[in-house]
Image (cartoon, rainbow, N blue to C red):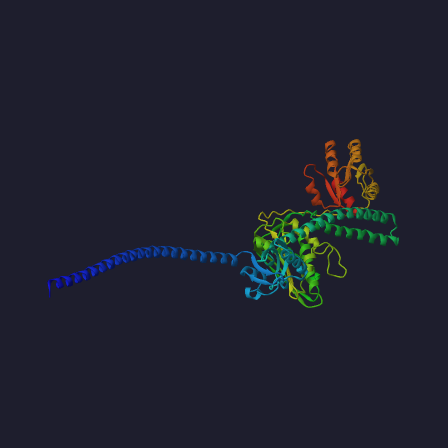
Length: 573
């Protein structure tokens, strides 16, 4: 091999090596580039992974917050104190919360897909239909007051507040409805309305009773005068006696009306209900029907109350008589109980005529019977004046108890079940002082030949009463002056007070009241005896006269003998 040949081969090999080296260099460069790219990509992936991790954490936090919010609002929806419903235009319940279902007395699944109207009292169907029409007539809200048929037969008065939910095409397809229970408010409104009605009736009854007593006084006195003019064997005397007795019975009815109106302020003394009922035993046995059996459960450790024993006897006798009538025609039991009770505000809210009775210990007299029971409609009216379930009701009935219970600061609780019986509980405040105030009745007996002399002033705006009193006192020997109003009375009193033996003064007159007239008379002279006369009761009159003293009182209507006896008592002759 020649040198040239070897050199040439060497050069060729060298070129190959150079080419391979260049290729390797290029590959190295490409590797470095790829490496750099890979490193950059890896770095980017690392950054993206961190970003994804952060985003994932944020998403997880958002998911947790969404779940917490869902639970919170779910609890708020389910456990809300008011009912929530979703209704369609036909009033079908699409959704309801637990509270709403419980208000209606159902489980939620029982309510879904039912129509709300089927749970309403029929009287309110039209009002609910109008409510739906208003809500679905356009995007708006509306409210309505309704009464539902609770499955437990409890009254359920509610206010529905509905707001429409427009769909995608702006048409109203659903509404959300809130149900607010107003049963307690409604009960209090009914109770207030009933109390206001009874108060209005009481004012009316008091006014009628007063005027009625004035009319009866005129009838009674004139009948008495006519009897005195007749011979003992006159047949007319029998009829006049009946007129006089009827007038007195009418006065008893008027006094019941005064009790109802609250004008009959009571005599005040310590009364032990157990002892009082023990004394009434024979009377109560006579008052009940033969088909009834009365059982006594009387506490021996009863705290006295402060009150009027005769009025409390009237309460007991009225309740016993009603219980007897409730079981008339069949055999039955009446239980008369006295006991101490602890009452709270919730119990007092179920009572009638609560007045100022406070929570705590009270004295209770309870009359229970196994009679026919009282239906809800009768329960609403049973304390109304002259209301009676009998074909021909007589007297004031249970209404006569209203004023008595109110005057004693008490309350009455009534519970009844048709076919099972009725229980009346009368509650009285406890009397811790136990001070007894005795009262004595003034006898109306007087000698027929009782005679007097001197001037006597009769003041009354009722002509018949004034004239009759003038005749009666004149027959007793007095010279009688009369005045038909306060101004005349004061003028006559001022002119003759030095010679006056006494004054018979009516309380209710036009222009000047009896109080004003008495005040003027006492300014002139404090020595002349004054007998007050009124259709109201003595206790009511006494409560009005706190400044000027008077010497006696006589309630209209009164017979002649009672008037003369009162004059004799006051004049002390």
